[in-house]
Length: 319
Image (cartoon, rainbow, N blue to C red; front, side, top):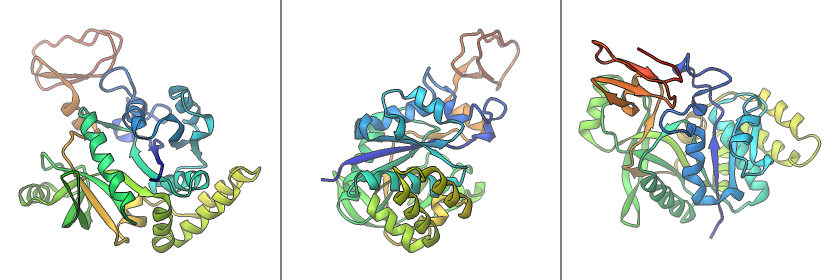
C-alpha cells in the first residue's frame, strides 16, 4: 500500500475577518474555539493519518517561521514556503512535487487550515475512505459535506452516479462544481439533494494529481516539473520564484477539477464550518443571554439590554 502524506494549505490571508484577521495574523492563526489556532487544530486532525514524519505545511514566506514555531515536531523543510501567493493550484502542486521527489508512490491528503470541525473522528473516518478510494484507482477524490442549510458562502458539488462502495459509504462521480449560489438556488440544492458543500479537502496519488496537471494545466505542470528538478540544489529558491512569477494564480477548482473527468466525491456528515466572515461566527460562538461570545481571551463580557450581539472576547472587559 502507498504511504499517506498530508499537506495543510495555510497561506491564505483571511481578509474577510478584518480587523481581527490581518496580514501578519491571518484567520488560520486565530483561536476561535479553544486555545489552539485553526492551523494547529487542522494539523492535529490529520496527523494521525500520516504521522509527523509525513506531515507538510504550505504557507507564505512571511508566515513560514510562525508555522515552524507552532509545529516544532515536524522537520523545518516540511514547512514549504511559497515564493509568492498564487492561489491553491500552485500551492497544492508545490506540495505534490515536493512529496513526489521523496516518494513517487505517495497518496496525498490536502486540507485547508482555517476550518472548525467538532466531530474529529467522523472527519478522519471520511478521509480514510477517501484514501482507500485513491489507492483503488487513478481517481481525484474530493470530500463533500452534506449541507444543513442553504448557505450562500460555500461552493457546491453536484454528485452523479454511484461508482464505488467503501466500508458502507457510497462514493459518487462528480457532475459539476457550482459557484457560491444565491439564496434561492441554495434552497433548491438543499431540497433536491445530491449536492454537497465543497470543503476543498482532497485525496489523490501524487502521480495521478501530476498527470491531471499535465492534461488540464500543462503550463503549470511544466513549471512544477522544473521546481521538482531543482529541489535539493542551490537553485531551488530561484527556480521556484521564476516559475511562480510566470504562471497564473488559479484555484485548484478551475485549474484542474472543473476540467478533469476522473473526480469522485465522498459524502461526509461531520460538522464543518468555514468561518469566511463575521456572520459565520454566530455558528461557532457560545450563546449567552441571547448574545454570542467567541475568542480565547479571559476578559469579562457584560451584556446590558443587548440582544443578538457578537463579541470577540479579549483579555479586557467588554461591556
